Image 1 (tube, chains in turn blue, brown, purple, orange):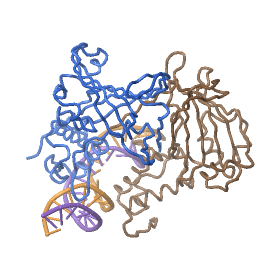
Image 2: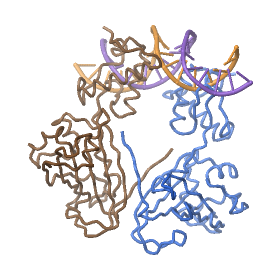
Image 3: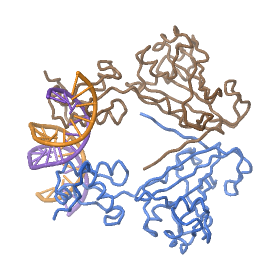
Image 4: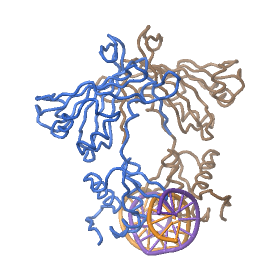
Length: 242
Length: 242
DNA sequence: CAGTGGTCTAGACCACAGC
DNA sequence: CTGTGGTCTAGACCACTGG
């Protein structure tokens, strides 16, 4: 039977359908890695032409939530920001090849009274509990990035029962699996610090690059705040504008 | 009469049409700022459905070469990279408002024997002549960015007859007007310099950000190489990944 | 008002994946 | 072989622009 969608004036059909599909992704009705129903079936369900469905899906593909594979179907994508921080640094191993560093959680703890400014980002009470982590990214035995991570305790309490060694190389798939929290976009801000000291990076009053990151879930709420640091001398960022 | 397009196997029609339109833009058949023919007329000319024309135009719009305005038409865009360098720095005037600095050509000269590495980028003989410029970007009387620019003399000789003061705030529209050279994309690489001295920036052995830029024309050839420098303490870059 | 791009339809046929 | 997404058609009607 056709799904009823509100035909209020000025609402574009493909926008409404995009919104409906996004809702289902947020609710986990269609799981990450699984295909969503075919365009033909969706067209029938929403009682629109297949072109309209394609337009709606196109928006979600360009937003990074879906992936189309010809002949197979349209799949729910696990957004991958694993390289997003790393793209700011020269990352070569001993052989000169580009390589992703390995992530390691150095410590994780519960903050009974979280940091007020960060609770404000999360939309929580100013002294709500938080989870705090320190994390490193290592390549060839050298720590390249040192990170401090804050999470709202009300959504991520499950992480407190996880052993440090059980965190994988990527945190966001872990968030999804253990806390049902899907990160769909991140904002990053880079600044320069003339003199940073950091135990993991093994630097003392040296120049560094600081990367602040705000991570958003499907509803647009901030669900993680992170500060990452790397040596300024490792900094290298390339971008193309068309 | 319909334009003949080669229907060789595996060639998508909208790709061929995109290519044909891009050719006309490169040849200046349709001028910057002017509208191209309507979708209806193009569909007739290429003897395809209007949806196919829309797809071809969509590609060029997302590539930054065209702009659609509903009810008016589809226009040839002057790509604008004026803010691209500036997006890496905190740019506030005395009142705290974001503002674009003003560009000024400090010197321009002809290099009888150009720099070999740069001639290689241009695809010229290793000692071909080049044009060299030094340029500053100033806000509230303070130089924020200092630039060195190299151009192939064979394409930009006309610039040597221009008075320094007659260069506008933006160089690329000037390249188009005087040298019929349209810049359509740029690649930029940022790195950190622990100790730079620069007369314009008024710094001496201080930390700086270096931005190398390669600018491309419609044919994909590099037509400008530029090195820009700013104070590391001014550095601030924000990006969103979805 | 006529002309533009924006949305939408109800199909057709093709290319590809996988059984 | 069936089912998927990819391309393409030949229209329709709407929303917006400008004379």
